[in-house]
Image (cartoon, rainbow, N blue to C red; front, side, top):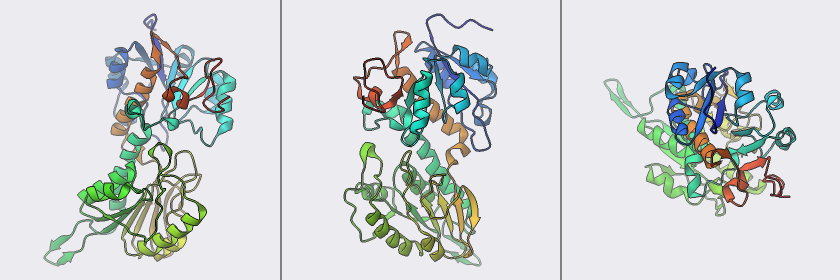
Length: 383
């Protein structure tokens, strides 16, 4: 076992590969970048294999391949694609920093367990993305971008005809009509990809600024005849609509959706139940052979009423695909982006060869949800 450089921060990454996860929170290129910031990397064997990186690639960049027990014992900070399991939390030594999407908006008990264990928890979902200094740390943006791209490809693959108009000796095939619901990062990527594939694309979002963004990509903005002028929430994310607004929106979308061949929904509200944008009635109104891809499908529900994780075909012949793991299906690019996000967050907290949070800084105060320095307010309780 090699000796780690004295005085360096040790960053550890586990193998999170599963049936639904192919990404890794560290890539060889980032190992090299972190070395320049005084960070030494430990990574579990085969952690990057599904993303196209071998143990030899990591070793060549300067990382050490280590067993999980060594990572637990020696790492000062750990980076995750998701978050450490409760069983792993109990193994971690007090004072260890963990960086990941921790579900802090909806799982207070989990955050409390991190606090009890004496861990310093950095929740990426709480990143104040409006800060210019936070842009390179924004995992939500990077992974949603990958998700939107893949959503268009999944829809095109599932649709039983061409997306572009095609003139053949047997006649002209009309282009597919594609509706994107939610024009955030994922939605805009889906718009651009669907257009490049030749679809006629229309999109809708409650945020006033989204019309210009949609039209700048050459798509048409869907006019529902409704006004949700206060449609943008904190941090640039779409806010959750009121029950009355949701009912009006659903009725209008259901009616308009019937004219489309493909519907892609991308309206996630981080850590919370996503809004329903297409009801069962809306799905039933689609023609046989239509495809719906719900990127927000999860245990909390989805943008499409009745969607589940996986694929189903309704009695009316509509293919409904609940696809929350799309970023993992583009593992190399998704890992490259995610690893940069996690590394930049880590480096932000490295000061003079040690890890420290300054709770007077907005970014630190927002993201550190457990293990706040003594005498400073907790990001979770404000007390």
